[in-house]
Length: 366
Image 1: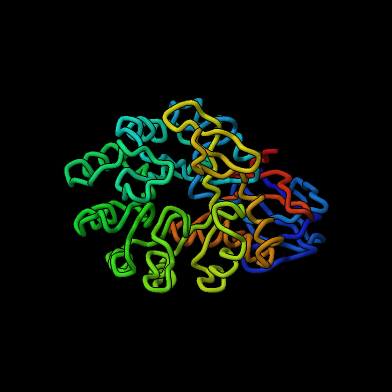
Image 2 (image 1 turned 135 degrees about the vertical axis):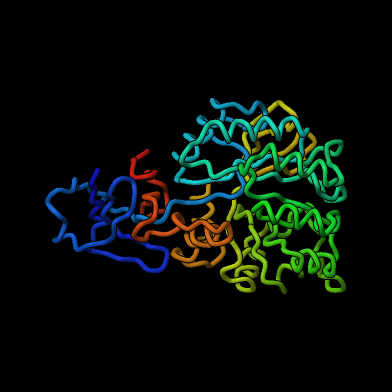
């Protein structure tokens, strides 16, 4: 199918173009041409008032469409979650599982492997190899000390479906870190009580990023800057939750100024549940029944708006934090930008930053 998207601003990930049409061919981006030069065999679709941006990428999200995936991993849960998230403007995401029984991880691996979906990029295991001191809402009884045989068995069962894992660097031996890296898993330091030195050692060992900066990690203190200080002083990336609740907008703004392109957005969003993680919907967040903060209630598009409205981050840069930068971290070579040859995964945002639809491999969803 040959499509030409017109009457919209087009943000490529580098610059915003106007007066041009975006050409799509068989689910891929062909390129940009003047709106007066669209080939006659293209079907023209108008998107007036919209800005077309690269499809939004969320590397940490637990649920969508009313489904918390870990409650009962299944093909139906996967497709319901994906459909719900695509409607919010997200075109690609890692299904995230918090610390849980190994059988739950294994079931999720099987479902993701056997039910491919164009928006599902794989799994992010947030645990179980974390520090119980900084467990946050995670289940204490399921936190484990990693053993090589167990990790090897998980990787074999995963068969490439696990793309990211949150670990506490102070709880991991160097050989386990190397094992995970050798299997292509992006490692993220989180739920950690690491000192600055322990955090730095983890990044030197190959850990590439940190999970929800400031949350469930050692604090930034003037006598020991902890894991946040190690993030600031390293080349590591870090995700941050832009809801004004998990971190203040001042902390978001300062971190952006310090880290630049290394800081990217996640939602860490969950859904109401009565399962192992009994998330309760509050007005603007999710908590456990005892009040422990357990997840956000924002979409990625809302996170971009919050960056612009509350943290002084320009719109184009906020979009990069949800597209270009997470794609770079994960090594994606055909999503995260509007570029010839890339998958036609695109998000439409109106003047207020609200999603107006998603193209997923060239197919429009609204």
